[in-house]
Length: 418
Ligand SMILES: Nc1nc2c(c(=O)[nH]1)N[C@H]1C(S)=C(S)[C@@H](COP(=O)(O)OP(=O)(O)OC[C@H]3O[C@@H](n4cnc5c(N)ncnc54)[C@H](O)[C@@H]3O)O[C@H]1N2
Ligand code: MOO
Image (tube, rainbow, N blue to C red; front, side, top):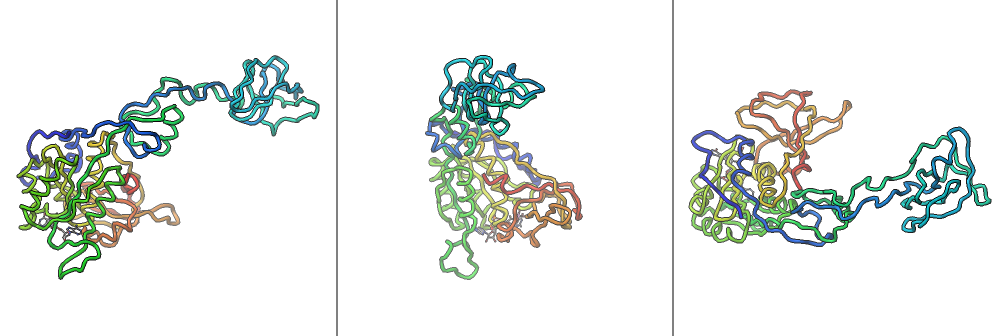
C-alpha cells in the first residue's frame, strides 16, 4: 500500500512549484495495487504488471509479402525477362514441404512460407502467365524482393512490451500476436470521490438562493474512470469538519486514493485540510500555479489523499496535472510527462503574478497554419470554457507577456485524459 514519511513541506508562505509537487509524488507515494491475470479481452486500458515476452517468432519463417511468384534469384536475369515453369502453389498456412529446385517458380500468396531455396518474390502484376503452365518474369528484380524475413517483427524471447505500460487496443493486438491469451496486470486503482460545500447540490435538484450544481464531483469521477480507475461516488459533504473527518476516515481503508473538491483554501469554512491533518499527514498544500493554487496532497492511513480546489476549472486542471500522475504512480503505471507542442499564439496575454499559468485554449487553422486561441475569460469559475477548450497553454513562472506570433507550449487535453 502507499507509504508516507514526513510532514507537509509547503512551509511558510512559499508556494511549491508544479515540478516540485510532481517530484514529491514518487518520493511520497509508492505503487499501491496488487497484480492479477486477466484474459486479453479484458486487458485494454489495464497497466501491464510484468514485461511481456514473445512466445513465438514473427514472422515464423521467411514469407511472401505479395501475391505473386517465388523463385531463386539466381534463376533471374538482370537484363532479360526469363520464362520458368510454375511447378508449385503456396498459400498462407500451407507450406510447400519441399525445396524449390533451380529453374522452378512457385505460385505464392501473401503470407505464404517461402519454399526452401526460394529467395525472391515477383508480384503477379509484373508477371505474364504464358497460359501453358509457365510464367515470364521481368528482368532486374532485386534479391529478396517482397520477402519478409523470419523474426523481422520479433523472435521467441523478445521483450515486446515492458511493465508499467497502460495497454492500448494496439498493444492487445501485439500481446495476442506474441502468444498471450492472458496478461498480468495491476489491479485497478480504487478512488473515492467527495465534493464539499454547503452551496453545492445534485444536478437537477431544486436550488436554494446561492446554490449551484455539483459539476466537480461528476467531472472528477469521469476523469478518474478515463484513467482506468474504479471509482466510488462518495457523494457530497457539507462544510462541517466533523462530517468531513468522519467521511474521509471511514473511506480510507477501502480506497487507494481519496479525492475531494472544495474547502482546501483559507476561508473560515474550508475544513478539508484540518480533517486530513487530524487523520494523517499533508505532503504539500498550495502550489505556484493558476488555476489550482490551493491543491493539496496527503495520506490518510494507507490511502493517498488529493484535495482539489472548489473552483471548477481549478479542480479539473489540477486533476489533469497532478492527480493523473498520482493515479499512474499508485496503479503501477510508468509516469511519463505529457507531450507539449510549440505553437504560435494568436492572442495577447499579460501575466500579473508569479504563478505558472495554464490558459484554456484551442487550435484554429489560419491562413499561415495552426494558431492558438484562448478563452475570453480565464476566470477559474467558468466551467464552460473548460469544455470548449482543446488544451492548455503553459505560461512559465518567469514569463511576463505573450504577444501574437510568440511560440508557446500547448498541452492538448488528449495527452492527459487517458
Ligand atoms: N483569501 C483567499 N481566498 C482565496 C484564495 C486565497 O489564496 N486567499 N484562493 C482562491 C483560489 S485560487 C481558489 S482556487 C479558491 C479555492 O477554494 P476552495 O478549494 O476552498 O473551494 P471553495 O471555497 O469550497 O469553493 C470555491 C468556488 O468553487 C465552487 N465550488 C465548490 N465546489 C463545487 C462543486 N462541487 N462544483 C461546482 N462548483 C463548486 C464554490 O461555490 C466557490 O464558488 O479559493 C480562492 N479564495
Ligand atoms: O488557484 Mo485558483 O484556482 O486561481 O482560482
